[in-house]
Length: 170
View 1 (cartoon, rainbow, N blue to C red):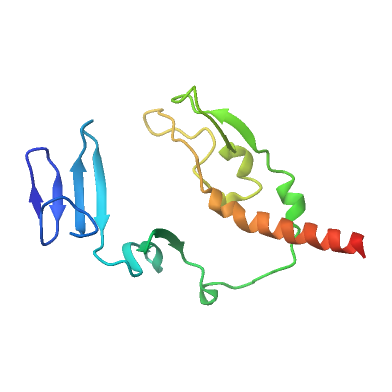
View 2 (cartoon, rainbow, N blue to C red; view 1 turned 180 degrees about the vertical axis):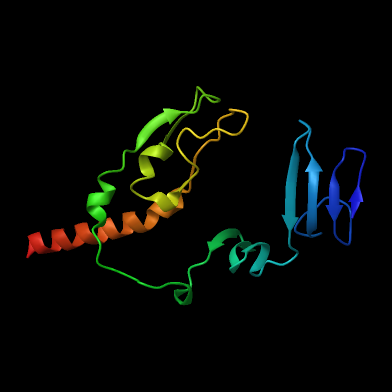
């Protein structure tokens, strides 16, 4: 491990710039004084760079392979029970309210998305935090959304619509 005059911290066999040809890990102090985490592998094969664990064991990872990055979460069938393929996705999907908005910090950039509290009752696993939560000092604790959790609902709705189209065409 090595630190430098800019308070950057580097781990690995070499302490020059972290890259695919060097490998290793580093917290690099950027020009605006923020710290950026660099993780690098010297292989183009599938290489996990981060593993996530909790008391249940390994629950996720980030890995690279060739020119891509995978964000993986636990999905093995052996971790699941009460699997049900017969649920109504279309009714739930129609409750979602996609919106166009800008973040207060970026008034000139309009994006598509959702308001977390509006999604929480429809796809609760997509939402972290509680609406209007504050910490002990009264400071807002913001909700978050993992939009990837909406994908199963979207796929199931497409399957349901495809079945309806096929039935209408027959």
